[in-house]
Length: 312
Image (cartoon, rainbow, N blue to C red; front, side, top):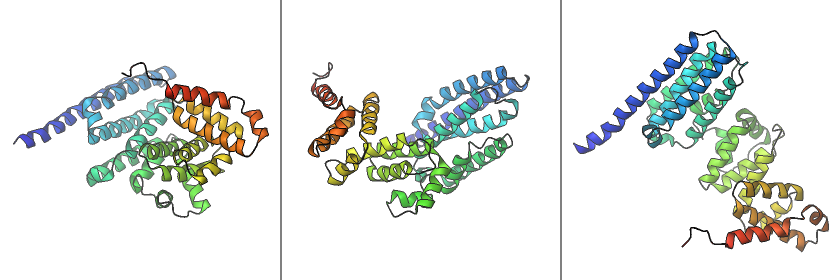
């Protein structure tokens, strides 16, 4: 009896959450439709839309349970697609909000084990995303294509991606095709998720493929992810060789980025490993471009050894 009541409570909370979200989004759309299409009305809608999504996605019922959280995104995407005829891209917020909405939903899907979702829920979510995608395509917006693809195939079940994650040999052409289809932002999310999940070999392989892909204009973030993964596998002779191959200017940039991101331990490991190799090989050229190296190592080590003011 108690168990049944415990299971019913989240379902009731989910129903209230969904109803309230639908009501608020419908109100925003109604207010938008009553105005002429303009930058001002589009900006006001986008502001209200974002505030609504933040409120309901951050509510206890949504954040603690998978289904409500997923439903919040499904309804929000559907609502935005319905409002699209009354929005103008002369307001830059329209495409910005749509892009961030897709990225946030993609990030959520990466963390949801498909085995925890009832099959009918997954099918309904996919169909809803497909319908919203078709509606947005009429206005030239292809943003939802990546969500259509991964909800059709499975988030981690693309055949080429499965080869990459199992570290099987992958043809360069098919790897580049997958990388180009998903795009840098979504691949960066995949790599960060793999690193966070401690799937370092998989993250290393994927980041290396992305860094070597000629179709990505700016590979700096993938190079940094790759070097970060390599650092986590030290001490390892192959890892040291990989780090030694990197240009010293690039190593310095990565160290500075890691330090600014609060990854001081990784920055320290990279710095000491790289400088040790350069000293062992008597690479004077590199020292010209790496004047901060020894000082950085010392200052970072000092930070590592210094007790935290809240430590007892």
